[in-house]
Amino acid sequence: MQESFRISSDSNDEATRICRNSQNFRLSRYAIEKGFRFIMMTKEQYIESLRKLNLNLWMFGKKIDNPVDDPVIRPSLNSFAATYEAAEDPENEDLMVATSHLTGNKINRFTHMHQSTDDLIKKVKMQRMLGQKTAACFQRCVGMDAMNAVYSSTYEIDEACGTKYHENFVKFLTRVQDEDLAVDGAMTDVKGDRGLAPSKQADPDLFLHVVERTADGVYVTGAKAHQTGFVNSHEVLVMPTIAMREGDEDYAISFAVPTDSKGITLIYGRQSCDTRKLEEYNDIDVGNKVYGGHEVLVIFDRVFVPNDRIFLNGEVKFAGMIVERFAGYHRQSYGGCKVGVGDVLIGATQLAVEMAGCAKASHVKDKIIEMVHLNETLYACGIACSSQGSKTKSGNYLINLLLANVCKQNVTRFPYDIARLAQDLAGGLMVTQPSEADYRNPELKPYIEKYLKGVASVPTEDRMRVLRLIENMTMGTAAVGYLPESMHGAGSPQAQRIMIARQSNMEQKKALAKAIARID
Ligand code: SF4
Ligand code: FE
Image 1 (cartoon, rainbow, N blue to C red):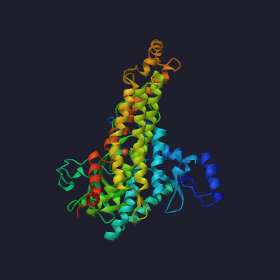
Image 2: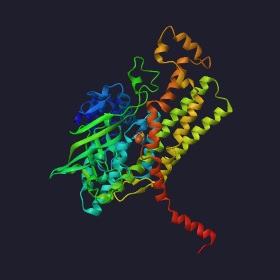
Image 3: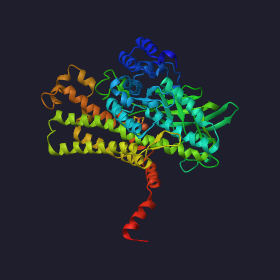
């Protein structure tokens, strides 16, 4: 990253000089007033930095040379960029800005190692705020969660095995913080036959693995599926996908490389209604014109990883620790981001019933209350698992794993219930209203204006916009993030049930019952 992409200073004078030259005056004033060493990219600097990446990206059968300005991809970039933009606003300092425990610099919270339960709570609040702003997946949490998991795990691996992974990781993390980089966290392998261990698959590449070892590093081959935000990231932090056992040594690998490394190929995931973004009238029908999310299939074909970028290499018994911690953090995350998205959907539904003139009906009010109740229950879980977090040996804080898994288990259900109620209250017009092209046609517009009218004082176009937003969030591009991702992201429901069983402390519960029942 070039120096010009950073706002960085050791003194007030230097801060003043750099900030005067900065494009962002609010951020500049803020940094000067505070007089601290301030290391964060502005939204514009972040977007420009992505233009320098040379990704091997494919979509709809074609190579995409300019993902930054691609109309299908750009909304997801806008969501990711919101994590930079929000940090520029001094009003968000408490949630968006943290102090690096490594350098003492002010950094974006997305690159921070949580130093307290308060940090964990602020993380969830930050995610809710960004979910409210984007109504989509803003993607940067995966890297934050991966970095926190690998940070504490490498410390404990080194302690047990005498390796130097933590040192490697701290070096990587320092650069991420200093340059305010976007990091993709890559865990999910394609997995092939689910009944077979990584080393027993018919095709050895179905789990990412080391194919060659040299004095300078390793070469890896395999694929990571469902990669959220990869196209908008500078670096990828790769982790194993499951707990491993003897014989799986080549698969117990964790490392970080630039996203445009030689040998990485990206195939963009399709989303329902994605080509609406390419239509002539790309406004009402897309539902959410500015923001979105994306996933890609990431193929590693003999990608070289230098030794100092390796964080696990064959220590099979620690693969499970990284998986458990990353999954725990990301299950906590959903108690923030999905709640923020839910806030937007509840708001849209309330608008829809008001525009239709039925907001006062008792069953309508009750359904809205139910939506709020479900949404706030998810938030309660996100806050609870954060407040009950604890310090790891490395010093960063881990959420309470039982409560984080309960949080995510609820996330696999409640957004579906909220979406069902939103569709119930929105009515069929959400999916049967004419297209924007028809609405813009002078011959048809008067009819549409007249017959799609609800409450007389509400413009028909406003009603169409709200209904398309609900469509987008419950069955369009944003529904990918709000529904199936709520089901499968950070692990499918059964993965949480296994963890809940493991963390439930059943012996203690039995002892409690025995004591009350006076059983010896
Ligand atoms: Fe962040 Fe939520 Fe997207 Fe995961 S699903 S990256 S937690 S916004
Ligand atoms: Fe996710």
